[in-house]
Amino acid sequence: MHNIAIDISKEISAGYRGFSVKTAKTGRERVSITITIPVRGHVPRFVDRGQLVLASVGHLYARSANSFDVEKSLSLLADVYLESGIEETRKAIGGGMFALFVLDRARGRLYVTGDFLSCLPIYYRSIPDGFLLGINQFDLSDGIMPGIGACAEYLAYGYLPFHGSLFPETSRLAPGQLLSLDLANPSAASVTGETLPTYPALGERIGDENEAVDRMDALFSAYFSRLGDERLAAGLSGGYDSRLIAAYCRDKPISFVTFDNPHTNEARNARAVAATLGSQTRIFGIPDDAPSRYADDFVYGASTSDSLESGHMFANLAVLMDSGPEYLIDGHIGDVIFGGGWYYKLKDRTEPLGRILLGLDEYLDPPQGDEAYLRRLKTGYGRRIGGLGGNLDSIVDTESDARLREMIATVRPHCETDADISELLLHRFRGAPLTSGGPVSFMRRAPTLSPFYDAGIFEACMGLSKKLRAGDRVYNAFYRRRFPELARLPKENTGGNATQSVSAYRLTHLATSGSRKLVSLLPRWMKSGGAAGGNLDGFQRNYLANGDNLSFFGEVNRRNRDRLADIGIPPATETEITDAPILALRRVSLGLLLEGRP
Image 1 (cartoon, helix red, strand yellow):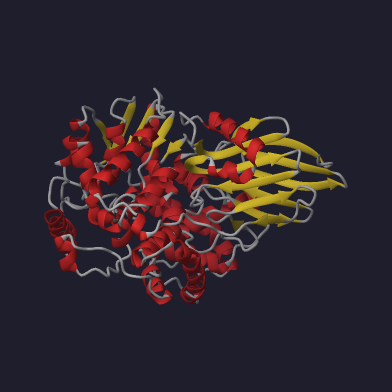
Image 2 (image 1 turned 90 degrees about the horizontal axis):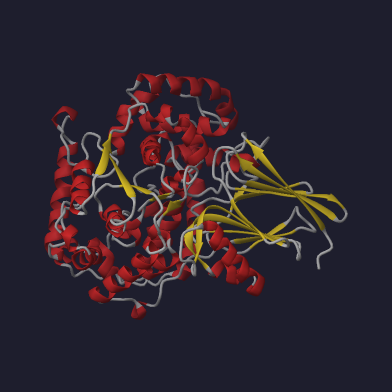
């Protein structure tokens, strides 16, 4: 039995942006643990067994759970811990995006772990005679100066793909890591090495289309079978990921919402999917003043996962919550995990175009040297910008190269092919810290389910041959077999449909991409419709032409001019909104995050 007395107190605070824990040694044989629960932000769930306390933030569920109820899953995980310890407890988690805190009073230990890609961030920092833990870096960083390298990276990319935090003294738990704190010495924690899911050997991967569809259908069916009669809400774009959710939930009490802004196909496709499933979707427009209107959601929700250029995300959340859902469901990153986005989004295809169009692409090339992956990733998948001012661009180049090499070294042992490395780097570099910004931010309003981050579904997709997954081949087969009524509806970003042959589908995609490039060269007044997804360029133009936003941006810049100058960030220029609109949005975002209030 541990002989350290542990005093636990809980505080409710309006000033905190997330759940946090402070441990401190208050006497020779006494340790205090202060748990701060935010009035706004992500609300934790607890299971208290006396000597054992489990707390989770975000959403998790046990593999053996028959529902998505967090408290029930925490109770199941507590049983596993008492019988088999922390490692078996981690293996018993079925999925979700979460931070899990396990306090073992009997052994005087505190364990902290997260989901397998660390989508929901967990930050930690050592202090004199104590330790700070939490899900928002700003709650742990009072009195600390942000680092110029991390701030420059945020301006360049719009998020932090390499730095764990904006603050040098505050670290972020990496995927697969377990933090263990001995409460007899609460100022020093041990952190295990980073681990990632591993691909099966090439010979063990599923290469038969029918077998792959059967496998995935069984897993999706099991996932959605955990739902009962809870009220649900989901965004419906009409794309493959959102229509999958709609199809499996057609008999559930679910409301769909779709934003219909100029130059997108969202509403047309979403209406067709909803009508085919005997439902309907609520069509709404993203307001031009979304960044200023939803600044509070940005500050308390996204942290550093994205910037105000994605103000549409919070406008979407506001409408999703109108129906009072018990769960939100988001299909983010399914096009990468189940579909073929893992490869095309890195813009460096080793397969010749002719083989791709004929459906002969295999993606079996061996891993390449570090330089190949540095070249692919340094662009930030189209989001990196330059012209930051001063020496910030060179700082980003120097620091990102070093951190990318570390990332590549971590990923290599889990991969057999060049395509494996490309995909896992995409998850590590972009998928977890950026794409999860939607679901993780949504969680501060309602538990958010993401089927493609179910551990079984994610691992099964890794076990499908890349030949099947590339270019939506297995996704198309899935719709033909499982939901044939949806198979003829076109996918919004390709223009093709699941009934087409592999070659016809890819030729349609090629023609669609070519026409969009031609249209992009036309004057704005000549463009009409055709873009897929959020059309970020269009949103940014509207945001920066809105008077309420401009007034808001100017005030934020004035308040934070000296703060950013102290870090080494050059001040905004008078013409920045016109000459460098994305940089202007990111500068305002950084200022808001650092000052901690909208």
